[in-house]
Length: 359
Image (cartoon, rainbow, N blue to C red; front, side, top):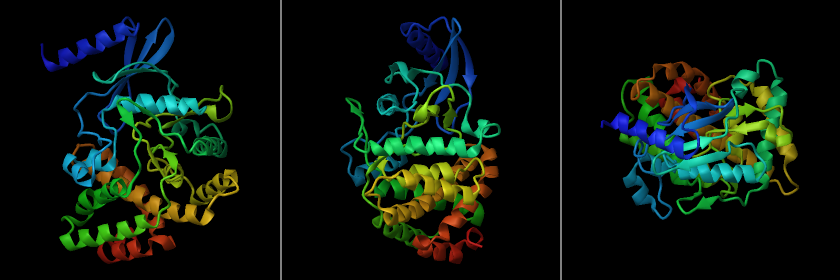
């Protein structure tokens, strides 16, 4: 039996054990990862099959790995990505549901084999329904969900095969470095020099040293193509949340950046600023607005530096040229990020070495 046939047999066996062996299946659009999805239908009832092939990505970060071990293991361990570890998805889905949010219920899972049967939350992604539902309604609901999540800041889900880790400086550094590794050669036609790399990393380390301590549940990809509108539910449950398996314990500003500096759809900067104000209005009496603004400035620049690198990598290494078309929007975000006072030194670096990202 070849590998594809063996994998298909594993899939059939998993579904049979879950009671969905006779379900009809159709492919669903995937994301930029190695995961794939199928929509199942059985007796009129829907479900989603997540397929995460074991070994398809570099190892995830072991709980006890120090910095040198993480660097030796590679990018997933440095950036603390879950990779194909379905134990992360299961634990995090349960944690989100426990605090009253609408993550997909996990009906059945076999993490070792790389299969999970999930609740189907439908097709009404924010990116689609914003054409017919008021943008402010959608975004305030998403921010309400974030505020509810941050209100339960002590949540650190764990099970025997997964423990939630911190979004630490090494993880942020590894992500920010992607822009020099992949985006820089795309724009410059040559890799960055060692001295440029050293200067760049030094500037990020200085920026990260001023961040507040990790204090909130961070989903990492909280944006219009990972949020679903569920108007038949009430309150924060109206927002369906998917693609959260890489969540870490980090800074509350990060997911707000993900939402408002979206790489895939335009969000007017004035509207984004009003939504930041709305988030602040929900904060408690001990909210540190100055610290939050500093975190927001640094994390916005860090996230968009990462995305510039990821999109360039997807286009060049993975043969997905459509991601080139998304770069101008991310470049515009990054240009605005560098204009914030907290990123003045980073702006000077790019003004000297890659001025088109500043001017």
